[in-house]
Image 1 (tube, one colour):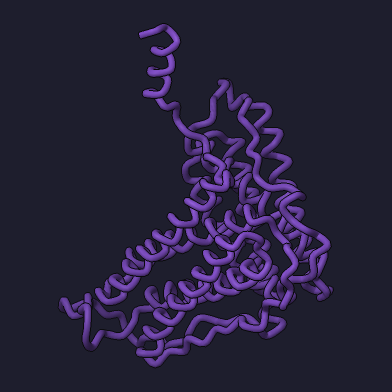
Image 2: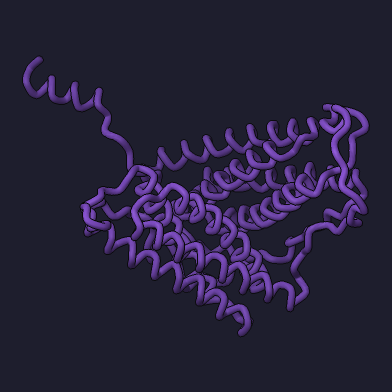
Length: 342
């Protein structure tokens, strides 16, 4: 691929962004295809169609780019990973919440890719992905507001003056009475309640349709973890006399017909785990109160251990596709040595 006056190869960061985008879009295409087969609400269908079309366009661009760069096209996911004849697994309203949360993940990933990209064509692609994610987020959120299901972050009274921290009490303590929450801390608590609430519903639904017992067991464990984390974050808000209600318990149907392959389900859960790790890490960085940072750190370790167990399942089943990586020099040396009898 010519970039300017030079044939510039892809950097490792560009490879990572492109590979990740392909994997995510190929998975999203399968999930959205089933959503489109089961959606009934005429207002929600166009939002799903936009998301599906965007994922399809991204994949087509990436396949062409990979061929030009002699870059191996990832296996990803295909029509064999989704049963389009399976009954609906979620309510139409849940589709909107799912799309809103997925658009946030898309905005985060594409923003990082733009920041790390050097080639103009790669940056332009990720800008297009970002634009699609922003548009999808707007469409989903506005329709949620119109339907009265959008849950706004808590309101607080505005300050009447600017203030500065005067002592170390602002940093709080691990136990005992704490200072009031800042708006930054509240924002992250709200985000992590919302993502865990959606994640809990995904775990329940996936567990109903997964085929392997070990996968079902893993998903039910994830449901319990998500529920626990929602309760921990909600308690922090409630202790500050702030609302924390968020309920999606009616969004999963009773279908047990295999809808997605166990491989696709585990990939989706892995993506949710990675998102949770990133969200918690960011929340720790912007939450000065010691008790909050401590809770995030403890829960972050729980997610990390859960993610490791998931990775082990995927490795054992041969489902974990390896991202682009540097050559194993030791293996090359040993292989070359064996070849020449050294």
